[in-house]
Image (cartoon, rainbow, N blue to C red; front, side, top):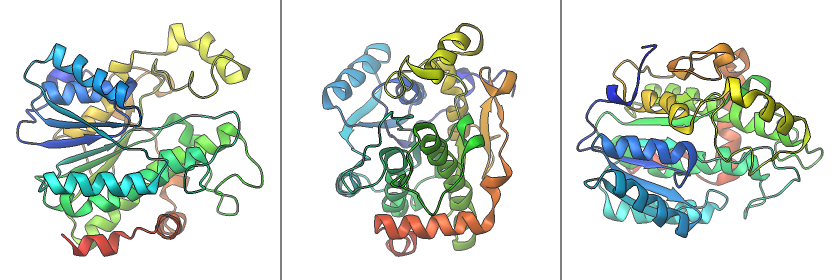
Length: 312
Protein backbone atom coordinates (compact mmCIF):
# COMPACT_ATOMS: atom_id res chain seq x y z
CA UNK A 1 0.00 0.00 0.00
CA UNK A 2 2.92 2.35 0.67
CA UNK A 3 3.61 2.71 -3.05
CA UNK A 4 -0.04 3.05 -4.16
CA UNK A 5 -0.49 5.24 -7.28
CA UNK A 6 -3.24 6.09 -9.76
CA UNK A 7 -2.15 3.02 -11.73
CA UNK A 8 -3.65 0.97 -8.90
CA UNK A 9 -7.14 2.49 -9.27
CA UNK A 10 -9.53 -0.32 -10.26
CA UNK A 11 -11.71 0.25 -13.31
CA UNK A 12 -14.44 2.75 -12.50
CA UNK A 13 -16.39 2.01 -15.65
CA UNK A 14 -20.12 2.19 -14.98
CA UNK A 15 -19.72 4.27 -11.83
CA UNK A 16 -20.95 7.84 -11.38
CA UNK A 17 -19.03 10.27 -9.19
CA UNK A 18 -19.63 13.80 -7.91
CA UNK A 19 -16.65 15.87 -6.77
CA UNK A 20 -17.18 19.23 -5.11
CA UNK A 21 -14.75 22.06 -5.73
CA UNK A 22 -13.16 20.24 -8.64
CA UNK A 23 -12.30 23.09 -11.02
CA UNK A 24 -8.73 23.18 -9.72
CA UNK A 25 -6.29 21.77 -7.19
CA UNK A 26 -7.00 18.49 -5.44
CA UNK A 27 -10.53 18.22 -6.81
CA UNK A 28 -9.36 18.64 -10.38
CA UNK A 29 -6.66 15.98 -9.99
CA UNK A 30 -9.21 13.64 -8.43
CA UNK A 31 -11.64 14.22 -11.31
CA UNK A 32 -8.89 13.67 -13.88
CA UNK A 33 -7.85 10.36 -12.33
CA UNK A 34 -11.40 9.04 -11.93
CA UNK A 35 -12.33 10.02 -15.48
CA UNK A 36 -9.18 8.30 -16.70
CA UNK A 37 -10.28 5.16 -14.86
CA UNK A 38 -13.61 5.18 -16.70
CA UNK A 39 -15.99 6.82 -14.22
CA UNK A 40 -18.71 9.23 -15.25
CA UNK A 41 -17.61 12.32 -13.34
CA UNK A 42 -19.60 15.41 -12.42
CA UNK A 43 -17.29 18.30 -11.59
CA UNK A 44 -18.89 21.01 -9.46
CA UNK A 45 -17.85 24.53 -8.57
CA UNK A 46 -18.95 28.13 -8.13
CA UNK A 47 -17.16 29.57 -11.15
CA UNK A 48 -18.72 28.44 -14.43
CA UNK A 49 -15.81 29.75 -16.51
CA UNK A 50 -13.31 27.74 -14.49
CA UNK A 51 -15.68 24.79 -14.69
CA UNK A 52 -15.76 24.80 -18.47
CA UNK A 53 -12.00 25.22 -18.61
CA UNK A 54 -11.49 22.26 -16.27
CA UNK A 55 -13.68 20.05 -18.43
CA UNK A 56 -11.79 21.07 -21.57
CA UNK A 57 -8.44 20.34 -19.90
CA UNK A 58 -9.54 16.89 -18.77
CA UNK A 59 -10.93 16.05 -22.20
CA UNK A 60 -7.65 17.25 -23.68
CA UNK A 61 -5.83 14.61 -21.64
CA UNK A 62 -8.50 11.91 -21.97
CA UNK A 63 -10.57 12.25 -25.13
CA UNK A 64 -13.01 9.57 -24.03
CA UNK A 65 -13.60 11.09 -20.60
CA UNK A 66 -17.24 10.98 -19.48
CA UNK A 67 -17.19 14.28 -17.66
CA UNK A 68 -19.50 17.25 -17.13
CA UNK A 69 -19.72 20.40 -15.04
CA UNK A 70 -22.53 21.60 -12.79
CA UNK A 71 -22.83 24.77 -10.74
CA UNK A 72 -22.83 24.19 -7.00
CA UNK A 73 -22.22 26.86 -4.37
CA UNK A 74 -21.76 25.25 -0.97
CA UNK A 75 -22.11 28.68 0.62
CA UNK A 76 -25.81 28.56 -0.25
CA UNK A 77 -28.22 25.90 0.99
CA UNK A 78 -30.56 26.89 -1.83
CA UNK A 79 -27.82 26.12 -4.36
CA UNK A 80 -27.18 22.76 -2.66
CA UNK A 81 -30.87 21.88 -2.87
CA UNK A 82 -31.09 23.02 -6.50
CA UNK A 83 -28.05 20.96 -7.50
CA UNK A 84 -29.39 17.84 -5.78
CA UNK A 85 -32.74 18.27 -7.54
CA UNK A 86 -31.10 18.72 -10.95
CA UNK A 87 -28.84 15.74 -10.45
CA UNK A 88 -31.70 13.49 -9.33
CA UNK A 89 -33.70 14.49 -12.40
CA UNK A 90 -31.03 13.09 -14.70
CA UNK A 91 -29.49 10.27 -12.64
CA UNK A 92 -31.11 7.30 -11.00
CA UNK A 93 -28.21 6.57 -8.66
CA UNK A 94 -24.86 7.79 -7.37
CA UNK A 95 -21.85 5.60 -6.61
CA UNK A 96 -19.29 8.05 -5.29
CA UNK A 97 -19.53 11.42 -3.55
CA UNK A 98 -16.28 13.23 -2.80
CA UNK A 99 -16.78 16.19 -0.48
CA UNK A 100 -13.62 18.05 -1.46
CA UNK A 101 -14.38 21.78 -1.68
CA UNK A 102 -13.02 24.10 0.97
CA UNK A 103 -11.68 27.48 1.96
CA UNK A 104 -8.89 28.06 4.44
CA UNK A 105 -8.19 30.53 7.24
CA UNK A 106 -10.03 33.52 5.79
CA UNK A 107 -8.34 36.54 7.42
CA UNK A 108 -11.64 38.31 8.17
CA UNK A 109 -14.85 36.66 9.30
CA UNK A 110 -17.27 36.23 6.41
CA UNK A 111 -20.67 34.59 6.28
CA UNK A 112 -22.50 32.41 3.77
CA UNK A 113 -25.84 33.24 2.18
CA UNK A 114 -27.47 31.51 5.16
CA UNK A 115 -25.47 33.39 7.79
CA UNK A 116 -22.97 30.67 8.67
CA UNK A 117 -19.31 31.46 9.26
CA UNK A 118 -17.81 30.88 5.82
CA UNK A 119 -15.37 28.07 6.64
CA UNK A 120 -17.85 26.14 8.78
CA UNK A 121 -20.52 26.75 6.14
CA UNK A 122 -18.59 25.78 3.00
CA UNK A 123 -16.20 23.19 4.38
CA UNK A 124 -18.72 21.35 6.52
CA UNK A 125 -22.40 22.38 6.65
CA UNK A 126 -22.77 22.62 2.86
CA UNK A 127 -21.35 19.12 2.52
CA UNK A 128 -23.56 17.80 5.31
CA UNK A 129 -26.65 19.13 3.51
CA UNK A 130 -25.45 17.90 0.12
CA UNK A 131 -24.78 14.38 1.37
CA UNK A 132 -28.16 14.22 3.08
CA UNK A 133 -29.98 15.31 -0.07
CA UNK A 134 -28.08 12.80 -2.20
CA UNK A 135 -28.56 9.91 0.22
CA UNK A 136 -31.48 8.32 -1.70
CA UNK A 137 -29.34 8.20 -4.86
CA UNK A 138 -26.32 6.89 -2.96
CA UNK A 139 -28.43 4.09 -1.53
CA UNK A 140 -29.24 3.02 -5.08
CA UNK A 141 -25.58 3.10 -6.10
CA UNK A 142 -23.23 0.15 -6.57
CA UNK A 143 -21.17 -0.21 -3.40
CA UNK A 144 -21.55 3.54 -2.74
CA UNK A 145 -18.82 5.52 -1.01
CA UNK A 146 -18.70 8.98 0.53
CA UNK A 147 -15.24 10.52 1.03
CA UNK A 148 -14.80 13.62 3.19
CA UNK A 149 -11.71 15.81 2.88
CA UNK A 150 -10.26 16.58 6.27
CA UNK A 151 -6.84 17.98 7.10
CA UNK A 152 -3.86 17.70 9.39
CA UNK A 153 -5.46 20.79 10.92
CA UNK A 154 -8.14 18.59 12.48
CA UNK A 155 -5.55 17.74 15.12
CA UNK A 156 -5.88 21.26 16.52
CA UNK A 157 -9.62 21.47 16.06
CA UNK A 158 -12.30 21.75 18.73
CA UNK A 159 -16.04 21.81 18.13
CA UNK A 160 -17.04 24.98 19.96
CA UNK A 161 -20.77 24.50 20.43
CA UNK A 162 -20.98 27.81 22.28
CA UNK A 163 -19.63 29.71 19.28
CA UNK A 164 -19.80 27.47 16.19
CA UNK A 165 -20.05 30.46 13.87
CA UNK A 166 -17.21 32.47 15.40
CA UNK A 167 -19.60 35.33 16.09
CA UNK A 168 -18.27 35.98 19.59
CA UNK A 169 -14.60 35.55 18.78
CA UNK A 170 -13.24 34.82 15.31
CA UNK A 171 -9.82 33.32 14.72
CA UNK A 172 -9.07 32.32 11.10
CA UNK A 173 -7.13 29.16 11.79
CA UNK A 174 -9.28 28.09 14.74
CA UNK A 175 -12.32 28.24 12.45
CA UNK A 176 -10.50 26.23 9.77
CA UNK A 177 -9.39 23.56 12.25
CA UNK A 178 -12.94 23.26 13.61
CA UNK A 179 -14.36 22.82 10.09
CA UNK A 180 -11.87 20.07 9.24
CA UNK A 181 -12.43 18.27 12.52
CA UNK A 182 -16.15 18.47 11.74
CA UNK A 183 -15.54 16.84 8.34
CA UNK A 184 -13.69 13.92 9.93
CA UNK A 185 -16.38 13.54 12.59
CA UNK A 186 -19.00 13.61 9.85
CA UNK A 187 -17.29 10.74 8.02
CA UNK A 188 -17.14 8.60 11.15
CA UNK A 189 -20.68 9.41 12.29
CA UNK A 190 -22.11 8.85 8.81
CA UNK A 191 -20.63 5.35 8.81
CA UNK A 192 -22.01 4.63 12.27
CA UNK A 193 -25.49 5.76 11.28
CA UNK A 194 -25.35 3.96 7.94
CA UNK A 195 -24.50 0.72 9.73
CA UNK A 196 -27.31 1.26 12.23
CA UNK A 197 -29.94 2.20 9.64
CA UNK A 198 -28.88 -0.13 6.84
CA UNK A 199 -28.06 2.60 4.30
CA UNK A 200 -25.30 0.48 2.77
CA UNK A 201 -22.67 3.23 2.56
CA UNK A 202 -18.93 3.15 2.97
CA UNK A 203 -18.01 6.47 4.55
CA UNK A 204 -14.38 7.40 5.05
CA UNK A 205 -12.06 10.41 4.96
CA UNK A 206 -8.72 11.56 3.63
CA UNK A 207 -6.31 14.45 3.86
CA UNK A 208 -3.71 15.60 1.31
CA UNK A 209 -0.85 16.43 3.62
CA UNK A 210 1.00 19.54 2.49
CA UNK A 211 -0.09 19.80 -1.14
CA UNK A 212 0.85 22.67 -3.40
CA UNK A 213 -2.56 24.13 -4.25
CA UNK A 214 -4.19 27.58 -4.23
CA UNK A 215 -5.89 26.91 -0.89
CA UNK A 216 -3.41 28.89 1.20
CA UNK A 217 -3.13 31.65 -1.40
CA UNK A 218 -6.91 32.02 -1.43
CA UNK A 219 -7.01 32.18 2.36
CA UNK A 220 -4.10 33.50 4.47
CA UNK A 221 -1.95 34.02 1.38
CA UNK A 222 1.73 34.74 1.79
CA UNK A 223 1.37 37.04 4.79
CA UNK A 224 1.55 36.23 8.49
CA UNK A 225 3.11 33.28 10.28
CA UNK A 226 1.22 30.65 8.29
CA UNK A 227 2.32 32.10 4.99
CA UNK A 228 5.90 32.39 6.20
CA UNK A 229 5.99 28.80 7.44
CA UNK A 230 4.40 27.63 4.21
CA UNK A 231 7.11 29.24 2.09
CA UNK A 232 9.81 27.93 4.42
CA UNK A 233 8.60 24.32 4.42
CA UNK A 234 7.30 23.99 0.87
CA UNK A 235 10.56 23.02 -0.86
CA UNK A 236 11.21 20.09 1.49
CA UNK A 237 7.85 19.10 2.98
CA UNK A 238 5.25 19.52 0.24
CA UNK A 239 4.15 17.53 -2.79
CA UNK A 240 2.09 18.25 -5.89
CA UNK A 241 -1.68 18.50 -6.04
CA UNK A 242 -1.70 15.24 -8.00
CA UNK A 243 0.20 13.51 -5.19
CA UNK A 244 -2.01 15.18 -2.61
CA UNK A 245 -5.08 13.69 -4.28
CA UNK A 246 -3.84 10.11 -3.86
CA UNK A 247 -5.24 9.58 -0.34
CA UNK A 248 -8.66 10.70 -1.60
CA UNK A 249 -8.45 8.40 -4.59
CA UNK A 250 -7.39 5.51 -2.37
CA UNK A 251 -10.32 6.11 -0.02
CA UNK A 252 -12.68 6.39 -2.99
CA UNK A 253 -11.59 3.39 -5.04
CA UNK A 254 -9.26 0.93 -3.35
CA UNK A 255 -10.63 -2.47 -2.29
CA UNK A 256 -8.31 -2.11 0.72
CA UNK A 257 -9.99 1.11 1.94
CA UNK A 258 -12.09 0.56 5.03
CA UNK A 259 -15.35 1.94 6.33
CA UNK A 260 -14.66 4.78 8.79
CA UNK A 261 -11.04 4.76 7.57
CA UNK A 262 -8.87 7.86 7.35
CA UNK A 263 -6.00 8.15 4.85
CA UNK A 264 -3.11 10.53 4.31
CA UNK A 265 0.52 10.62 3.14
CA UNK A 266 3.07 8.28 4.73
CA UNK A 267 5.92 10.79 5.17
CA UNK A 268 7.06 12.86 8.14
CA UNK A 269 4.03 14.26 10.00
CA UNK A 270 1.92 12.92 7.13
CA UNK A 271 2.91 15.89 4.97
CA UNK A 272 3.83 14.06 1.76
CA UNK A 273 4.15 10.59 0.28
CA UNK A 274 1.90 7.74 -0.88
CA UNK A 275 -1.36 7.06 1.00
CA UNK A 276 -1.52 5.10 4.25
CA UNK A 277 -3.89 5.06 7.23
CA UNK A 278 -3.71 8.45 8.94
CA UNK A 279 -3.81 9.44 12.59
CA UNK A 280 -7.24 10.26 13.99
CA UNK A 281 -7.26 12.44 17.10
CA UNK A 282 -9.28 11.06 20.04
CA UNK A 283 -11.62 14.05 20.00
CA UNK A 284 -12.88 12.96 16.58
CA UNK A 285 -14.14 9.75 18.20
CA UNK A 286 -16.13 11.31 21.05
CA UNK A 287 -19.55 9.70 20.60
CA UNK A 288 -21.43 12.40 22.52
CA UNK A 289 -19.82 15.25 20.59
CA UNK A 290 -20.32 13.48 17.26
CA UNK A 291 -24.02 12.85 17.90
CA UNK A 292 -24.53 16.42 19.08
CA UNK A 293 -22.79 17.86 16.03
CA UNK A 294 -24.99 15.71 13.77
CA UNK A 295 -28.16 16.97 15.44
CA UNK A 296 -27.01 20.59 15.43
CA UNK A 297 -26.11 20.31 11.74
CA UNK A 298 -29.57 18.96 10.90
CA UNK A 299 -31.17 21.86 12.77
CA UNK A 300 -28.94 24.49 11.12
CA UNK A 301 -29.36 23.19 7.57
CA UNK A 302 -32.96 22.09 7.87
CA UNK A 303 -32.03 18.77 6.24
CA UNK A 304 -32.53 15.48 8.05
CA UNK A 305 -30.92 12.22 6.92
CA UNK A 306 -33.84 10.39 8.51
CA UNK A 307 -36.33 12.18 6.29
CA UNK A 308 -34.47 11.81 3.01
CA UNK A 309 -33.59 8.17 3.71
CA UNK A 310 -37.27 7.31 3.46
CA UNK A 311 -37.23 8.44 -0.17
CA UNK A 312 -34.76 5.70 -1.02
